[in-house]
Image (cartoon, one colour):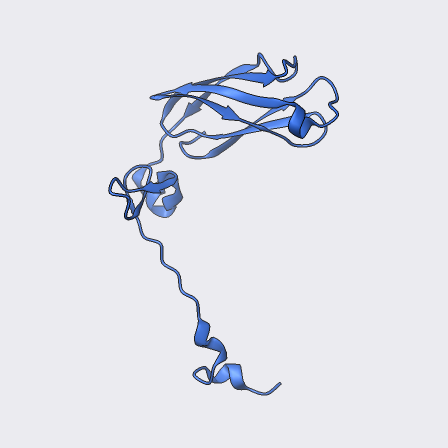
Length: 140
Protein backbone atom coordinates (compact mmCIF):
# COMPACT_ATOMS: atom_id res chain seq x y z
CA UNK A 1 0.00 0.00 0.00
CA UNK A 2 1.16 3.54 -0.69
CA UNK A 3 0.97 6.77 1.29
CA UNK A 4 -2.27 8.73 0.63
CA UNK A 5 -3.83 5.77 -1.20
CA UNK A 6 -7.32 4.77 -0.05
CA UNK A 7 -7.49 1.48 1.81
CA UNK A 8 -10.75 -0.08 2.96
CA UNK A 9 -11.15 -2.47 5.88
CA UNK A 10 -14.33 -4.57 5.93
CA UNK A 11 -15.92 -5.83 9.14
CA UNK A 12 -18.96 -8.13 9.39
CA UNK A 13 -21.46 -7.85 12.26
CA UNK A 14 -22.52 -11.15 13.80
CA UNK A 15 -26.21 -10.24 14.12
CA UNK A 16 -28.99 -8.11 12.63
CA UNK A 17 -29.84 -4.64 13.91
CA UNK A 18 -33.16 -2.84 13.57
CA UNK A 19 -31.34 0.21 12.17
CA UNK A 20 -27.59 -0.41 11.82
CA UNK A 21 -27.08 3.08 10.43
CA UNK A 22 -27.97 4.66 13.78
CA UNK A 23 -27.73 1.75 16.25
CA UNK A 24 -24.04 0.87 15.78
CA UNK A 25 -20.85 2.95 15.80
CA UNK A 26 -17.71 1.33 14.37
CA UNK A 27 -14.20 2.74 14.45
CA UNK A 28 -10.54 1.87 14.20
CA UNK A 29 -7.92 3.13 16.58
CA UNK A 30 -5.06 3.90 14.16
CA UNK A 31 -1.46 4.33 15.21
CA UNK A 32 1.46 5.13 12.98
CA UNK A 33 4.34 7.58 12.54
CA UNK A 34 3.27 10.76 14.34
CA UNK A 35 -0.40 9.69 14.32
CA UNK A 36 -2.75 8.16 16.89
CA UNK A 37 -6.43 8.78 16.17
CA UNK A 38 -9.85 7.22 15.94
CA UNK A 39 -11.16 6.70 12.40
CA UNK A 40 -14.90 6.06 12.11
CA UNK A 41 -16.52 3.65 9.70
CA UNK A 42 -19.98 3.28 8.23
CA UNK A 43 -22.68 0.68 7.65
CA UNK A 44 -22.74 -0.58 4.05
CA UNK A 45 -25.83 -2.80 4.03
CA UNK A 46 -26.57 -6.17 5.55
CA UNK A 47 -24.00 -7.06 8.19
CA UNK A 48 -21.17 -5.17 6.44
CA UNK A 49 -19.37 -2.19 7.96
CA UNK A 50 -16.45 -0.44 6.28
CA UNK A 51 -13.68 1.87 7.47
CA UNK A 52 -11.69 3.80 4.85
CA UNK A 53 -8.25 5.18 5.59
CA UNK A 54 -5.51 7.02 3.72
CA UNK A 55 -2.22 6.79 5.58
CA UNK A 56 -0.44 10.17 5.66
CA UNK A 57 3.12 8.95 6.32
CA UNK A 58 5.33 6.05 5.26
CA UNK A 59 6.01 3.31 7.77
CA UNK A 60 4.20 0.70 9.84
CA UNK A 61 0.62 1.35 10.89
CA UNK A 62 -1.44 -0.61 13.39
CA UNK A 63 -5.18 -0.70 13.80
CA UNK A 64 -7.67 -2.20 16.21
CA UNK A 65 -11.44 -2.23 15.72
CA UNK A 66 -14.08 -1.14 18.24
CA UNK A 67 -17.85 -0.84 18.25
CA UNK A 68 -20.62 0.62 20.36
CA UNK A 69 -22.56 -1.40 21.39
CA UNK A 70 -19.92 -4.10 21.76
CA UNK A 71 -20.27 -6.49 18.82
CA UNK A 72 -18.08 -9.61 18.44
CA UNK A 73 -17.91 -9.30 14.64
CA UNK A 74 -16.91 -5.64 14.73
CA UNK A 75 -14.58 -5.21 17.68
CA UNK A 76 -11.34 -6.79 18.75
CA UNK A 77 -10.02 -7.21 15.21
CA UNK A 78 -6.54 -5.86 14.55
CA UNK A 79 -3.96 -5.64 11.86
CA UNK A 80 -0.89 -4.00 10.44
CA UNK A 81 -0.45 -1.94 7.28
CA UNK A 82 2.81 -0.94 5.66
CA UNK A 83 2.73 2.37 3.79
CA UNK A 84 5.41 2.99 1.20
CA UNK A 85 6.23 6.47 -0.18
CA UNK A 86 5.81 7.57 -3.81
CA UNK A 87 8.88 8.54 -5.80
CA UNK A 88 9.19 12.13 -7.04
CA UNK A 89 8.56 10.92 -10.59
CA UNK A 90 5.33 9.21 -9.50
CA UNK A 91 4.24 12.39 -7.70
CA UNK A 92 4.88 14.46 -10.83
CA UNK A 93 2.80 11.98 -12.85
CA UNK A 94 -0.13 12.34 -10.42
CA UNK A 95 -0.04 15.29 -7.98
CA UNK A 96 -2.78 13.74 -5.82
CA UNK A 97 -0.05 11.44 -4.52
CA UNK A 98 1.25 14.46 -2.57
CA UNK A 99 -1.62 14.17 -0.08
CA UNK A 100 -4.85 15.93 0.79
CA UNK A 101 -5.30 19.65 0.24
CA UNK A 102 -5.06 21.98 3.20
CA UNK A 103 -4.72 25.70 3.76
CA UNK A 104 -1.30 27.31 3.72
CA UNK A 105 -0.01 28.58 7.09
CA UNK A 106 -1.28 32.11 6.32
CA UNK A 107 -4.70 30.74 5.30
CA UNK A 108 -4.73 32.56 1.92
CA UNK A 109 -4.04 29.65 -0.44
CA UNK A 110 -4.04 25.87 -0.70
CA UNK A 111 -1.21 23.37 -0.61
CA UNK A 112 -0.81 19.61 -0.69
CA UNK A 113 0.00 17.80 2.56
CA UNK A 114 3.70 17.69 1.62
CA UNK A 115 3.76 21.52 1.32
CA UNK A 116 3.67 21.69 -2.50
CA UNK A 117 1.60 24.71 -3.62
CA UNK A 118 -1.76 23.97 -5.24
CA UNK A 119 -3.26 26.31 -7.79
CA UNK A 120 -6.92 25.81 -8.57
CA UNK A 121 -7.86 27.07 -11.98
CA UNK A 122 -11.20 26.81 -13.69
CA UNK A 123 -13.20 28.61 -16.29
CA UNK A 124 -16.85 28.82 -17.23
CA UNK A 125 -17.66 29.69 -20.82
CA UNK A 126 -20.65 31.95 -20.13
CA UNK A 127 -20.42 33.66 -23.56
CA UNK A 128 -20.46 30.33 -25.45
CA UNK A 129 -24.17 30.68 -26.24
CA UNK A 130 -23.86 34.21 -27.60
CA UNK A 131 -23.19 35.74 -31.03
CA UNK A 132 -19.42 35.67 -30.29
CA UNK A 133 -19.36 31.93 -30.98
CA UNK A 134 -20.81 31.27 -34.46
CA UNK A 135 -21.41 27.57 -33.76
CA UNK A 136 -23.94 28.51 -31.08
CA UNK A 137 -26.07 30.43 -33.58
CA UNK A 138 -26.28 27.91 -36.41
CA UNK A 139 -29.79 26.77 -37.28
CA UNK A 140 -30.82 23.11 -36.62
